[in-house]
View (cartoon, rainbow, N blue to C red):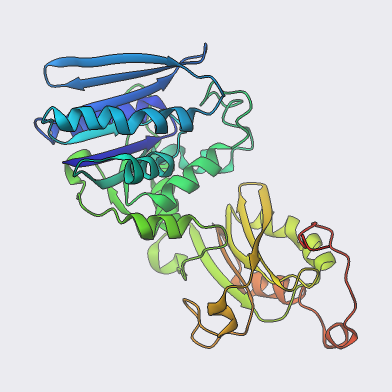
Length: 361
């Protein structure tokens, strides 16, 4: 049995996507999960004849993803045993597909496969969501007050994990043609691996590869990717820059503001002089930038072999930046100015760690 997992930022996009997918898959069932403000998680199961099942549970520990994960596999198992055809799972708004797919990969006993992971979104709102500095709760996308993710954080995670982006344009919301065009260009920059479907009938199933999807979401992971805005007609451009000397933590800290202001998304890894043995992941979405120590440099780097760089040094800084009117030469100068100089390398000075990245100290 094929399983189609649909994630979204809002219920309107999810509803439109699931209705279209059900219409293009005769005999399918749709499973919806929703969280109400009083902490009740509602599960509803529909097919072409109407409501098949409805249940509700109380969200006891505040994690909606966990509640869905624990309920999803048993619910689908019952549908499989009943001989149900394809099942479309509509996740609650702002719940990541990765959590649901992980639960299905490990929790289903029957022969069933996740054939597609789809993120449903309105392209004309994409840029605003990516740049929104408010939390999901503050923006009204979730009733969970302590969810500190932004809309951009959620959407970027879904774009990276999903194999398909299904464009949803609910009739209740007037469309913005100019914003739609910009949103489509931005989606192509942020998810070059994903297929973009204009409607549910255009979705090609069987394109989900779980291991590859998980690998794309690992902090510090980057896909070698560069576009030329002039060639594509896009207002956005993605540039990639690698520097092979450690970065001075003080100068890089000063440069972070410029980096964040000049682009809407940053991804990659850093080689920081204040934590030289550690690989530091960097991610920036909108005006938020954060760094994470992801451990020692992998053996593949120490052997001079990693994707996108046939002859790399033992460690390197690689940053992929997406934004409007990015200046590749200026981007390179900014990072080059952060590298240690010959004198700084020769001195071997123990530099201050302003980010607290070296956990061994």
